[in-house]
Image (cartoon, rainbow, N blue to C red; front, side):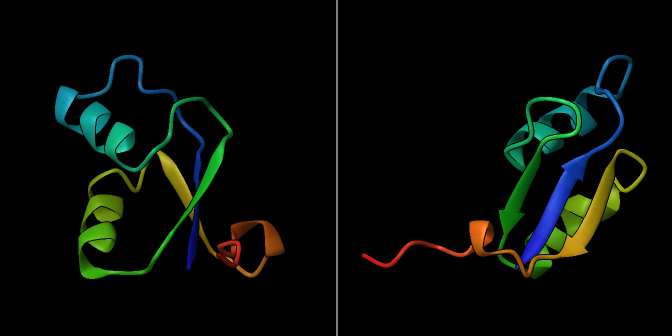
Length: 67
C-alpha cells in the first residue's frame, strides 16, 4: 500500500495533471489517500511527482476493514 499526500496546489497546473490528481482521489491540499501499489498507480505518481509525497502505508487507517 502507498500513502499519497497532495502537497502542492493544482491551481495553475497542466489540465492533464489536475485530472491525474483527481483520479488518484486527492481533492484538498495536505489530504492523503492509500492506494494499492501497481504499475498504473506508479505511472500516475511519476507524472505528478512534483505535487505529491509518497510513503509506504503501514497505518491501521489505510488497511481495508474486514467484511
